[in-house]
Amino acid sequence: MKLRFYYGPRSCALASHIVLEHVGADFEAVKLDLAQKQQQSPEYLAINPKGRVPALVTDRGVITETPAILLYLAQTFPDYCLAPLDDAFALAQLQSVTNWLCSTVHIAQAHFSRGYRWADDAASQAAMKAKAPQNMIDCFDWIERELLRGPWMMGEDFTIADPYLFTVGGWLAGDGVDIARFPRVAEHCQRMRELPAVQKVLPLHGL
Amino acid sequence: MKLRFYYGPRSCALASHIVLEHVGADFEAVKLDLAQKQQQSPEYLAINPKGRVPALVTDRGVITETPAILLYLAQTFPDYCLAPLDDAFALAQLQSVTNWLCSTVHIAQAHFSRGYRWADDAASQAAMKAKAPQNMIDCFDWIERELLRGPWMMGEDFTIADPYLFTVGGWLAGDGVDIARFPRVAEHCQRMRELPAVQKVLPLHGL
Picture: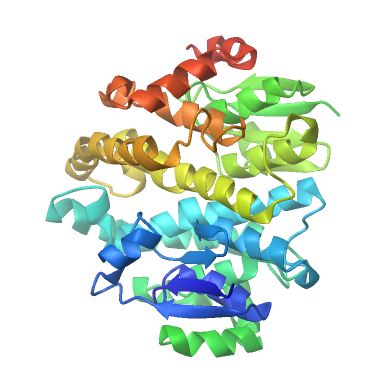
């Protein structure tokens, strides 16, 4: 069965979308308009009851959550060596990065525009929005200084962490943060933009 | 080298702590007093610059982030079959659960007492605290209804998702939410409490 991949433009789904393209997967990409809340439609909730993107439909069922989809693709297309599958420690280092991007950096970003998830009143949501750019700066300071080994996130090898970093770094501009303030991250972003898979996928995200 | 495991009582480190004990790992557990901010001490920041728990020190370096530590332990102690390592789809389903517990449920809980991470003023932090119990209820409604396959989280097999669910479910009482409102989760919790590893670890967390 052809894979089916549900995404919202510029969402964290971009990371998996790049990997799907990079490994030459046989997949159909289905775009959801998040502003129109298509991810909350009955049709999509039947696929992913969480009402979020991305979701990857395989012949065995649906996979959700970016770090899970990314590792699945690395395992399913081992020729592309996108994760050190046979080295538990190296894989743990990689997983530590993808999980942190998911549970800390993406969450920092989510407070910029989705504060309603965590507080009901407008003033609190505004306070979260006001603090979000500094939290993103703190995260990227740490990436710049410590996490990004170079030339790729985990060092010499391109892995699933790279499209994920690229995706999350792409949100900085919307927060009013100039990526140039993190020169190594900016260079990584440029390196990513040169990949054919990235060039093919970005227009589908309006980028 | 003996493993060294840094934890804070009742934190998400409990999940990895249970697994370390369950697989009979040769490890030394080092308790940090989070209320006294020992996780921010220069000594600990040299181990985990993020200033969070858990951290697992191995002979090759430090692993952080609960889902990464859990998968590392599953890979390192394969005889315990704590993850379907050779089945990419089944592993993705498991990873989807551990990642969601980390990036959604743990985050929902963090707004109860650590709202200062995302907003500076007391009123916003109070608004987050007020909403956190309902977010936890929503998460556990979904676990009760959909995620918890039974008897264990992923079905017939005990996996790394089980100590993680047990850990996160243990936070409900502090939010003023009675776990009995989720009968299948409560039953899972009871099943977990019968495991020797759990009985050995709980007192170290003051539980």
